[in-house]
Amino acid sequence: MLKQLLGKLPRKSSKSTANRDHGGNHTANSNASTGSRSSNGKSANSNISSVAVNNSAPDVSQNLGNRIHQGVNSKLNGDLGFSQYEGLPGFKDVPSSEKQNLFIRKLNMCCVVFDFTEPMKNLKEKEIKRQTLQELVDYVTSVSGKFSETAMQEVMKMVSANLFRTFTPQPRENKVVDGVDLEEDEPSMDSAWPHLQIVYELFLRFVSSAETDAKLAKRYIDQSFILKLLDLFDSEDPREREYLKTILHRIYGKFMVHRPFIRKAINSIFYQFIFETEKYNGIAELLEILGSIINGFALPLKEEHKMFLVRAMIPLHKPRCLAMYHQPLSYCITQFVEKDCKLADTVIRGLLKYWPITNSSKEVMFLNELEEVLEATQPPEFQRCMVPLFQQLARCLNSSHFQVAERALFLWNNDPIENLIIQNRKVILPIIFPALEKNVRNHWNQAVRSLTLNVRKIFEDLDHELFNECLLKFQEDEEKEVEIKARREAAWKRLEEIATQKAASDAMVVAPRKALTCSASG
Image: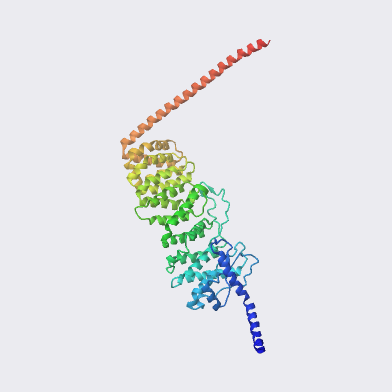
């Protein structure tokens, strides 16, 4: 009995020693599980991170199966040590059977979010993460065989931890003048881009990969994830918005179930931008995505798509910062008209509704877009809106800003538009003839006067009789205007004379009363 007891003592001591030796790993793994549970359902905002634990290979294989190696969730600060944050073996250094496990280990390792506002902090760890991210990109690109559901979940966890963060709003007062962004040449760049760029590249390749099963992936790329992804379009960094544009377009193409939701979510962003804030950095990128989406709409267009045009696309002409996104907006509008020519009347009347009054540079943009729309407009739709349209163009012709007048006159250089005008000249010429005559006589800019003479000559050569009728009516209207002006001046002169006579008579009445008052008091 005594020998048996003595024999057990060394073994008990050895076991205690082993427990002490491996206490760090046990604690880390326990924290990992706790961190995994506590992070479920929370937004993966900034400073949420996880540190990979450098375990032995057999232990890691066992832990992977149970998802214990989630990492230690913590806020990175000066007090946190990185003695355990070390590089993992390369994919070439492990057998094929272990590559999936190593892939997940590396993903967990890259859930750490470093502080790039202090460039000299954690340089070694930042470089380890950068290299690891690059290895993950190469693996996703060259992988053969479908990604497992666990791998998909880990990819989404890592992407969320790195990308989803709260932007610090920067003051934007006085940055936009007459629709021109004064700081357009100096965009704000994210200091964490060395890591963000590789994370975006990895996610783009993951979404685009043929090895990503859409049926499984849609469980993790869900509506909540898409909303957070859309929030990132407000980033100040144009490089980030460019990646987001490509990724969202790939998601739209691959996950058909999410298409209506994506359109509605973008619609909501537009509403908030137009009617509330007029501040959002990613409007141009969202419109570029929509340009491709609209191009793929089936015919006939659904009523939903037509309402999107009327309620969101056309009102986007209202904000002062139109110049920042006008080109993709104009493309989207033109796509709608080319898809359904009957929408031309709706679009043109929408442009007239939001036509700028005092912003000349914005007015030139409207004229540019109007030309593209008119090129795709058929005669019946043109006839429905030509009267209010050319009433506005007549005002543009007489604009004191030479670029506005010049751009309006350039419409006659477009053959399809000129044909529409010629076909309906009996209605159009009487509307614009006074503006043409006033330009020829009074406009200060020589180029505008020359272009006006060319347009005037087109109508004169085309229909001399109609031209003379309009000229005669213009002269009669001028004479009537002179007569009205003369009568108005005469009326004012009579009123002044009457007022003078009344003032004099009132003065004569007041004087005797004062005299009588003085006599009575005496």
